[in-house]
Length: 264
Image 1 (cartoon, rainbow, N blue to C red):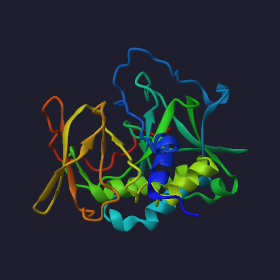
Image 2 (image 1 turned 90 degrees about the vertical axis):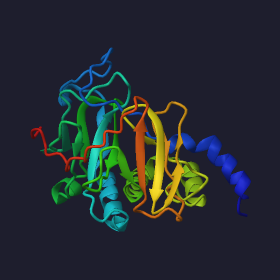
Image 3 (image 1 turned 180 degrees about the vertical axis):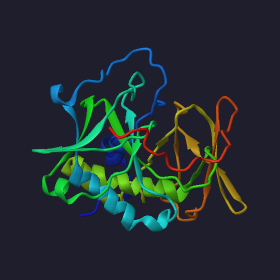
Image 4 (image 1 turned 30 degrees about the vertical axis):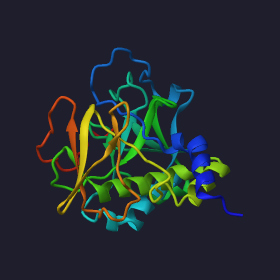
C-alpha cells in the first residue's frame, strides 16, 4: 500500500531532511579561532578520513549520465572542513590500498579531480586524507565557465545534487534510502529541500529566466539557499544571483577551474 503524500511528507520531515543537508563551509585558509582537527601523518592516524574509490566513481558516473544538465561544466570535487574551526592547511589526499598509494593533487581551495584508475578500482582503494575521521566533508563542484562569481546556474546545481545522491545514498539506512526514493529522489521531489551552502551570509537570492524572476528561500542562518531543483518550470539555464549581507555581489567573472597548487 502506498503512503499518502501527507504521510510521506511527515516521514521525510522526521527522518530524512538532515541526511542530505549540505554542511556549512568554511573559506579555505581563513584563520580559525580554534584548531580542532590537527593535521597528522596518514600512517599514524587511527581513524583517517576514508571514502571508497568505487563509491566516489558512482558520482563520476552520475556526472556522465546527467551531463545534459550542465554540458559545459567540468567535474571537480571539493573538500571542506566539517566545523567552523577546521582548516585545510596541509591537507593531503591519496588513493590507498594494500601496496598502493596514489597522490591526488589538491588545488589551494580544496578542489580536485578524480580520474578512473583500473588498478585502484581492482584493489578496492579508499580515498584517504591526513585529517582525522569526520573532520572533512566533500561536495561536487560544478560551475559553468564564464558566470560571475555570485551567480549560479540551476542546471549546475541540479547536476551537483545528482552526483551527491549517487555517492551518498548507499550510506543511508534501508528505510531512509527507500523513503527518499518513494518521494522521487532528493533532486526531483517537492517534498525534499536540498540547501546549498555559501561562504558568506546572504541578503537575498533571486532566480531569473527570461523575463521571469522570483526570490529564492534562504535558511534562517543565512548561509544556505534552497533552489527549486524539482520545478521544471525553471529551466537549466535559470540563473540564481546571490547578494551578500555586506551588500557586495562579487560580480567579477568566475575563474576557470583551478589548477593544482602542488601534487601532494
